[in-house]
Image (cartoon, rainbow, N blue to C red; front, side, top):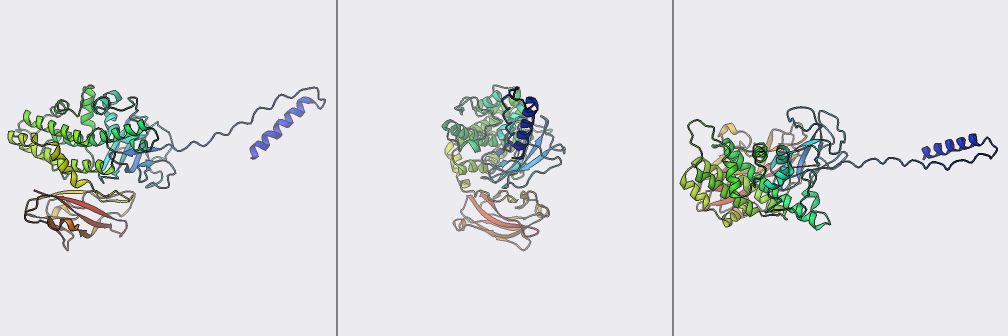
Length: 454
């Protein structure tokens, strides 16, 4: 309280001097003591997709994000995808090439992290003025038109927001789910579903844009929204989750390989039909974490494979097979991914693997050396945040749940490769888990590998 004492002494001295001690001058009413400026609360930033993202946020002072540059500061998130300066539960304090300065919304954002409920890694963009980085804001970053993005995602029609004035840059579904306002909660569920639908859409665009053969096991981070954003920007009235809209998007991209014929019209129509049916299966709103995760995992394991095989075949028979897929088929394909464990770590992230074994066949999967067989490895997509010496990783054990004993067998070899054998008569999806540690023995984590036998 020393500043108040100093102010009182100064005021008394001023009154005494003006009165000359005669009492003939009336002292004015003292000026109220100035109220101290409160320390502003730390600005909070959110990373989210189908679940909160555990990772970090990069802050760029310009409207243009340049990932290769060092013109950014950064903050780590906590397990709820929240980043703010001084967050004791975050992966790390402020870090990066530039010192962190809390500029509020005067930044564009690049988020890098792992979806907590699906375990899938992704990069997220957000335009200047954002406090949220998501798949939706990633699209908005390229389109730069909220009305066009809401129309494209049908958040003003089929999946409409209750409050049409939602600002996609600052409305976080992860935070709004806890709101006492029913409209906020309803719109949070809609926005969450929009992120999951968009996740599927980006994989479809990547396949048709860069054309097969592209293995569905190769993609690690979410495909870039830039290509789709250019289409939406050029067609501000397009609705993505309709067969007409999806077909228009997929027809935008020519095939680049010399000598390869264009994709057949019936193949594009089948892809658009399947993509739209998948979106309808996700529905207008998502209320459950497991449902959000299951559709994201099935996007990687099922939707991507289905479209890959369709585009590779590029034939009437392949188009007919995809056109015959029903909503019930999609629900059945998504069901095996409903029980993925929620991430509780913030250091080592074993990203889920999606493997295919022929019916009755045997496949050997390397742990961390793709040169041995050319196949994807269990640890090839696993990574760490903020750790030195986290690589290489070491496989400690593999575990097969008892309910899959009649489906597959899984055996760890001396060289840490894993032999997977499909049991006679089984087709479908099974999974096993593997425990791994870093080279220093710490941290450790458990990963899951899904095996589709077909």
